[in-house]
Length: 340
Image (cartoon, rainbow, N blue to C red; front, side, top):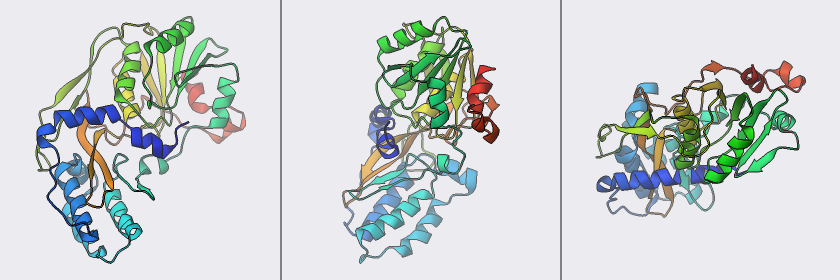
């Protein structure tokens, strides 16, 4: 399975390209800045100030003041610092954004902020998943699936990191077609390709659906955005699921997987069970500091069909958590709730 760092580096790579093309006229045009610790600090602060898309949302949510952040961290930087010392200051400054899509990539470390999942119970257990999947399950293109003994289909999907073959989906849904219900378990799916999320969700609708909206940054002001553009989900031309489907979520559902849950919320046969997702509703964009370190940040905000931001996550239709009593009996509380 893809580790967290490599997974996050690939999150929404296609989406980032789309965002870059859509905002080409507002692309980052960095002024010449000295390659010194202070120069790199100022370059990073300005990149976020002019191009990060959630500064006003974070201010409303928990009082983030990006100018105050500058005043607090600037005195911690001097030009005699080592690279690791500078990295620590920059990492801590970016952590103020509380955004899993904000990173600095260096040869010795990656700055990341994973409180969206690390501050909460995991609500998933590999030990329990092995008991439900057993050993005679099907494997195809990242999907693991089988028919449970009560004629319910169970699909485990851990990452949207790869492109999905339409033939793989046709084969899976054809095999599961006799089942009376489907459980789609995406707990701890950290995202990947938004195109793959759309492709899978398209198997659960028979008509085109309005699933949300997207904006693009158009200028350096914190509130300079394009008009909201509709996101529409078109039904697949392949085999589509026509019966109830339950999607299992936890705080580890992030980025493209968060978008997938947003899409499924609009599908008439779908129910979401588990914990609130981890969020991550800003398409990422990349820039570079004078020292060569790569910076990634959220640049294009996305919303649900009611024009509400999903940056901080999406609530399930039914909150369910794993219990110690069920674990002791070898039962996954969330899967069992879905079966009922």
